[in-house]
Length: 134
Image 1 (cartoon, one colour):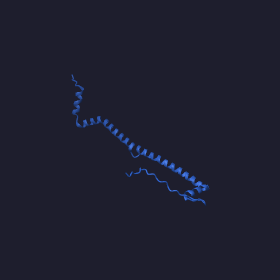
Image 2: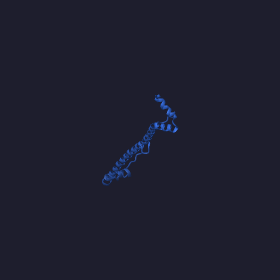
Image 3: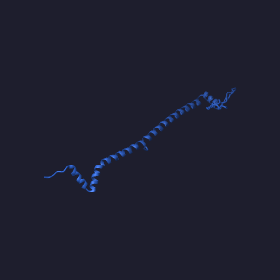
Image 4: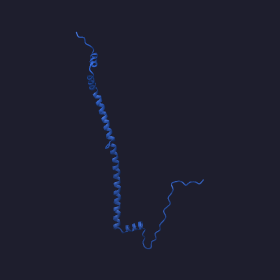
């Protein structure tokens, strides 16, 4: 009759007796999944970093968005100023009182018999308290 050996002893004996290249192939077959997982995680982390900090990433996108908002506000302010100046030009072209007002304010013109008084500019207040001489 054949004597049966325990399975653990029968598995250990052929593995130790196997040549080096067979043991290397056996190790590679068992290690490819953890190594593949490690490579996949590394690539995912690299991709995530690129999405956040890359040339066209979220940081760049937020900066461009803030700049776009600031430029839109500047354009809106310039358009309002432009509309005001157009309205002022239209008044100067059609309203004689507006022309007279501009001549008096900017050119200091006066009607015959009027006297213009120029007052000195008000003194500027100092932000520092006066120094005591004691």
